[in-house]
Image (tube, rainbow, N blue to C red; front, side, top):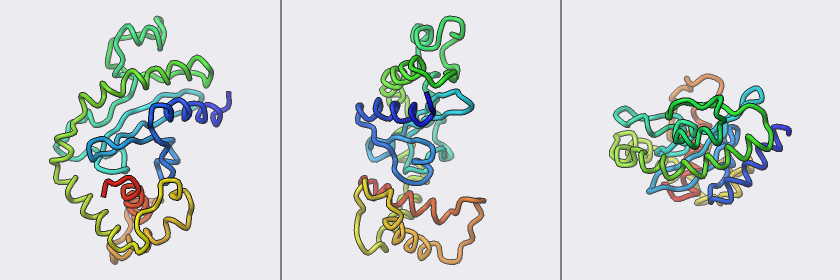
Length: 214
């Protein structure tokens, strides 16, 4: 099946578990799904490359996924296949590719079999990931307080309050958040390459406000 169809059907699968698609920014670009977890953001990221597919769990202070603060265990991020038992790997990956627990894997082919296996792997691993995730360490990290305070300062300058989740995909929704972020950052230069740090912060603040993380 086409990549867009695979992504659509995978979204149906995970939406049924209560995970919501992230409608804005890097989360939308990378097919990320979210649920609130003890004042943190639990995210499921679908990853595909050259006809292969896998997924990862991540828990963070905000929607800026991929960054694990200093002092926080790396278990804040895990590829889903690494969380499967040996028996589950044999069932969902295949006996010929089944190796020891904890190893990564990409499913080959965007087809019914890989879709079914990936969806089942998601349902099997969410609770395991959460049980091992460093939730306490994240909330105690200096980054938690610093980043939340920064996002809260941005929110305080937005005149029209909290956006609705379904409104976040509309370009006009982000405009006041961009303006507020520019005010907070002042003359600080963007040094993050092609994607503006101002845009990233504005998107993160809007997303966090919409779900009550700030």
